[in-house]
Length: 469
Ligand code: SF4
Image (cartoon, rainbow, N blue to C red; front, side):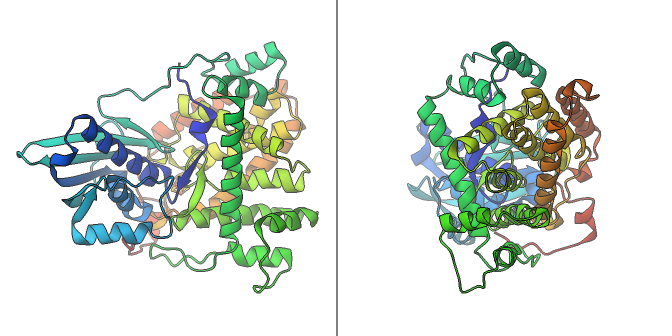
């Protein structure tokens, strides 16, 4: 049975893609660890990276080249200076010389092979030529949400014993029924197998703070997104209009959020704010900013949009409400990871926006007072109406249709949660278990054109010269 923490599904990341930026970056860092463990780091004279499949096809627009380059310098995406990351990576690639792990310079290049490797569409090989002519080589797969698997190794599963282990949502509901606890409490009991309550709260508060910072920054940063598609950032003007401010008036972050809550906006205005929160987050993601991966970067705007709807407009503006929300969202996402996929290269956009919408729907439903059954019903409804959603990012950039799609995923999540708390789950014809299975079967039937290759759909209709980054 897989052991996946809620924090594996929701984590601080860097844009624009969890599978194409964070995963390859993490793989590069792991390849350095492998070199160190073998005592070979100082003997490397040349580093060559080969990107396969979807990483090769859409890597330029997704920041894969930047990720593997900076990763091999020893830089970590959690702490990197996002404002200079693209320029630093470009300088290394232009020079063809890389400071390996920050120790010594080696020759460096990146190769692309459009044919995927058999195990997964997102493969990357690191080959290090040594001073005696030998080559130290390792292949990794970025399997979605920033998760990485090394060739020849099983996916890493933390060796912990959970009080309430569950592979399927139905099993989790049985734990809730036996204990009489809400989803968020049962999840917290499991999280204690990994870390203390204080550490759980600290991590949840960091996620919340990072989401706030991304929304705030996205609502205060004008301009055009990188990559060559000339997509204008829309969140700042929308936020200004909604708050009735002109550009000369900038409120500090806390005051800004309080001002939104104090508006007590009518439905139409709330809808616009939810859209604005989603756009702001995804515009930050597209601009290589710091966001919260949930469960992926392309879908990183759904959860904050619904969280801030819940906190600011549904009257639950407390740290504890945010913590419970994030725990339920993370656990809900883990069922898709265990039983289907959260990788667009495996399942299209239903695996990204669909899963994030299901995560947000369950979290909101519990927050609104829904039972565990109603919360999972909300997740089922949200996914049910994303089944078959394809991934066709224009130019391989995480911009069109991705940014707006987050707003749509958030609105569906809110509708699904309200629908579920008004419904009797016993009368539901489809369970969350069943919709996850259906999503996985749909993923397997889906043409490769619609799985993050930019070979079909919208991506096929509009060509763009993607700027290298
Ligand atoms: S279309 Fe969906 S799955 Fe594909 S990159 Fe955009 S958000 Fe991600």
